[in-house]
Amino acid sequence: MRHPSRSALLLAGAAALALVGTAVAPVVTASGATPACVVEYSVTSQWDTGFQGGVRITNNSAALTGWTLTFDFADGQRVSQGWNAKWTQSGTTVTAGNESWNGSLATGASVSAGFLASWSGSNAVPTSFKLNGTTCNVDSEPTPTPTEPTNPPDPGDGPPALSVSGNKLVDASGTTRRLLGVNRSGGEFACVQGYGIWDGPVDDASVKAIADWNANTVRIPLNEECWLGTSNIKPEYAGANYIAAVQDLVAKVKAHGMTPMLELHWSWGQYTGNSAGCADVHATCQKPMPNMQYTPSFWTSVASTFKDDPTVVFDLFNEPYPDRATSTAAQAWTCWRDGGTCPGIGYEVAGMQDLIDAIRATGAKNVILAGGLAYSNDLSQWLTYQPDDPTGNLAAAWHVYNFNTCSNESCWDSTLAPVAAQVPLVAGEIGENTCAHSFIDRVMAWFDARALSYLGWTWNTWNCSSGPALISSYDGTPTSYGIGLRDHLRALDG
Image 1 (spheres, helix red, strand yellow):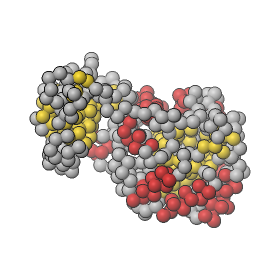
Image 2 (cartoon, helix red, strand yellow):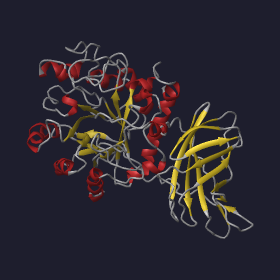
Image 3 (tube, one colour):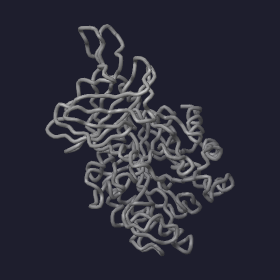
Image 4 (tube, one colour):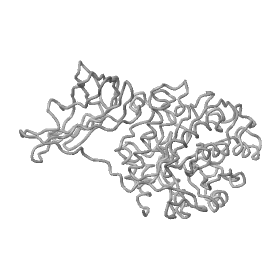
């Protein structure tokens, strides 16, 4: 799926890098008294010279029509930019004032804001916070005692180790498992566009909000140049930093009992033919096929990183469309499977077989998904050109939106049902650009009747008519479109 543009301020807030653990300033009370205000301060990501931090402010006093938070850094840290507040710093004192749209803070209400800052030597957590001049996290009693940080993460039971058995995905006990959930877009574009790694927060609360929809799977689109750290990507968003951020998000997804699905979305290779998304050689848009220059190396690295974790699923390539470049279906499907020199594509293509071979050469046995032609909407000859997987852990991926060609039950009966009878079928993206959910209701009903898997596009706060967005806030507030997926998932058993 293509992506809408976003404001610069929102983009700046997406710069999440290598996680170092979350530090939370303790709430101090006496005899169980409630503080006038509570501030939870976190360092969500840290690298050699900088870090990403955040505050969550809860007002327990009278309602506020405007707020200002102040605190002091002890180790020379300097705020460079921020979001959801107007951030300034004078000497050691940091001030965060409300924006015009989040100044009202009712009794018991909370607001969150984040920032980027520099550090060196050490990065101590601030010990005192004031909201409109009132000291937070303490009451008026003389002998305070520390309590545990609020809302510790609940690891749950963890996601299952998955494998393929016939046309089903199964866990270690042989029980059939369906992958039901959402896409979390951002990792495919923010880094190559130069402002971060994710689009919006990827903290524990935002991941828990996904789990609260009764989702059991999160698909995470990636960018191969960012993962490999090519020279065109800012170092802070590339290579080891990018990989660590992905590992961290995978860990958070698993901590809430959900299956992480890692997917290559944007890749290198210049293509200017029919339906080209961009003329850039770099990984700044969807290309018709993966490339031999970088993609096998990308999957070798990803597989090596996660080969000992059978809970992680690999999705080879987002939306192939060699059919737009070639003149016949046979040429397109051959290109899809075998790669090489493909008609209409000016770079050497890595076929699905090349990528499977690269993954299996690492010893990884993780379940692999392979989407078909026409932006993964065409599976009509998937079985005929099915690549070989020596582990037998290959499944078919399919995407559908209300504007696709194969978007009705007749097409699904004729092209999807035969595939689903032979191998597991996962609808990696379902969605509609109408801001309603009548179309995905039909998709989910068809897939439910056959005990198949599906994931909604996407858990991002975009305009749902320009790029189907499930939420209007990362606390899980659904759009009118997202209500359909949320309520459906919550109504399912298990």
